[in-house]
Image (cartoon, rainbow, N blue to C red):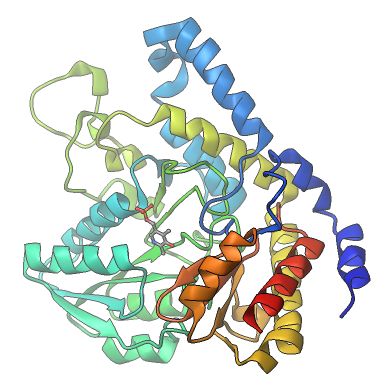
Length: 402
Ligand SMILES: *Cc1c(COP(=O)(O)O)cnc(C)c1O
């Protein structure tokens, strides 16, 4: 494998010019392979945030709320739905963190299935998802049915089928596994849940901005996801929630705040949920954080999800090729699927000394993350990761791992 080949891949990559749309990293950085955990800052985010502070906040002050801030969570939600989620308007809203959305939507889903007592999730789901399910089960006296997955493979349709039954109220899973990057069969699992009379809550944190989604066509009930990973919204930027249109006027979520009430500024007695997806809101929207999300979503819109997915496949294929040539002989195992059709935007490599090696790599300017017990996650972000950058990173891994 030659460096020239990596350079050729960069040259013919239609998304390569997007690298200049982001702020440069410091000189000493060899490779940023963590865009799946925190996307790099778009230059537009800096401009947008400065304009927000100077003009909107500074210039308009409290009038900003009537100039558009109040509608921002749903207006930007519609745009995210169109560009990233495959969702028609009126079903997506932004605010909160993914964890808080998960709480609200799991409770909302359970309330729509009174009499059913079981929540299905998988043993290796992202930690916050598991903890939330455990907390809600304790709070409401529900039972958890665990899908017994392996660390390096997400839930299969057959595994989910084993635990879904007549008492299942909700099935909640991550579409792209945060550890292995395996893509779960969202349409099939959603159908399976529906056939059992249950609802689904999909966690799309590692999907949004990485793989094309069609939530409407796949008849997903609820979904959540963060915006600071592939969507480049900035550290802690607000997460999104999706609720299928037919449920939007029916759901009840447990945190009854004024921003989710009908006639917000009437300040009347008693809580009555707003019409549609706004009822998922609770308190004042995080306007500053949403400015970053807007910049990220517009970049994704320009690049287009099909081209993004195509490059994600090319990058992960290249990583696996280099893995086979350089790292497998050094005792590494692949912790991600070999089939690109079921592999998301990162590649995990495994070796017993992964924890120590990760610290060495970070010190050497290759930013990756360690995932216990033995995984090193190489996050490949189509808008910002280059093939030469990836090649250089794999060289460092090979040389340091010898
Ligand atoms: C990153 C991630 C989260 C993060 O949730 P926060 O509330 O933003 O901390 C949740 N679920 C998955 C699958 C993730 O990858």
